[in-house]
Length: 626
Image 1 (cartoon, rainbow, N blue to C red):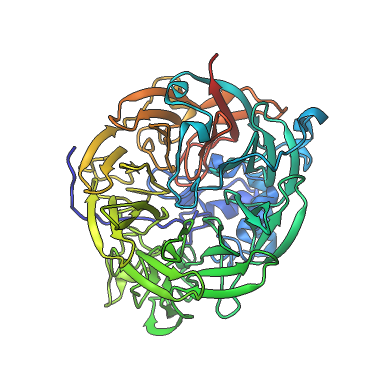
Image 2: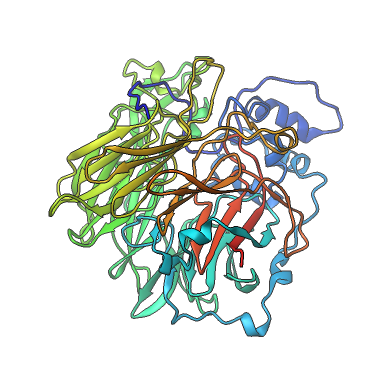
């Protein structure tokens, strides 16, 4: 395995593009007002998903009218880019995008309702997976007993059941309690019977979080973000216990993307406001938004403290080429799930890039925060001056007016932030290690006491979509890094290092590498979007009884031996899939939090609509063949 250390200009942030201003005009039939809006304001990105981070038009057309309205309305990720559109233009656009869709029933889960004999959630059962990170250390490592699966079982998986969602999948992950899995799907939180896929209960609300299982006063509960609020729910029946704002009181807030965690008597909420998408609007006073961390009292949602990666932006003296004043600093969002270090009483978070000048020392960083006070204990900045937003175009150098690299302050602008959260593992002697994976392709090992670098390794040149994108996994000896490295432009010299790479936790020495390759056979390529460029390992992996379980943007689920990297099994999720419910099912890319394990099963959310990937809408459950 060759480890490279060459920096490469990067392209994109973590936001999903829905609008780009301006865009090339195209001929438009006069009877389609929405198509006119699309051609003027959207087509430049969404007709070219292979060279942009935008979702492909076919994927957007799968989104429901309600979801599209949320995206372009106030508070939505694309609201700043849609700000120049009138109410009628937005309505016309949504009508054109969703023309021909069959209206999805709000009660689409009725067909999945469990019979009485299977409808009970046993809250006394052991927790198989407490959330995205599986355990409190966020290791994404399960023993065979905890998973209900052995390495041998993983070599002989078959489909047990599949559910089709009324909307495209979003890479959701599941938490597991006994024989019940909890997962966000189709704009609802579902409690599913693991063996059969039937729904024990349903809770309404759109969320991208993997639900967290914790305890309040000795009773198990679920916690997740729905919009700006935190909902705490009784896992026995899906009833709301309490709801409270997950937004800060002192400064501005934003979206809750990574997911919450339980820390003693608190629920910790990460926020990912950044301005990364808004920067592409040339009339926007770029930029606003920053990362923050909110501590709520677990018993009732009372706000206890808040930490901010920076203060509110002010006018920074810069004016773009259109005469629009600029603001900063902004950015350093917390995209990922935090981790708690009980030995030191620290909460450790990772952060994203700055989106306007001046750069801060909190961007692209790993930061330890006192769990009682919200005060910073230590921080390590992996890359300084990574100042970037979606106004920047590295392929053509036709940067928009708000691109930070245009100003004298410059900046590297690589978008090499941390999309993956940190994990905590025992190290050498009495030293514990904080492990964190960066989109630059770096794996970092930091001293948990001080934040000082113990070792680092880098795979390839990195990418704005990873390098290491959504997560890592570690057992007692090995840390596993998935490398995405999508091919993002016309550069013919680009070499992708897509694959899975394993390192010794104590020394950082490489152990093994599995190199990915595209699977673009004659029939399969027809079902894929950008099959030859989107095939790497982007979603967060798991280690289960000595086997690595990981999915690819090419829609394949791999089982690798954690000691050698040998392929033990491979399953294809792409294409039409028979489902339990009467919605047409189709598998696609596996990304984000898309692979979960527990209750003797493997659960895969197949289909992802962002970043030029292959859309799909299925949750697939695999079990060992008998």
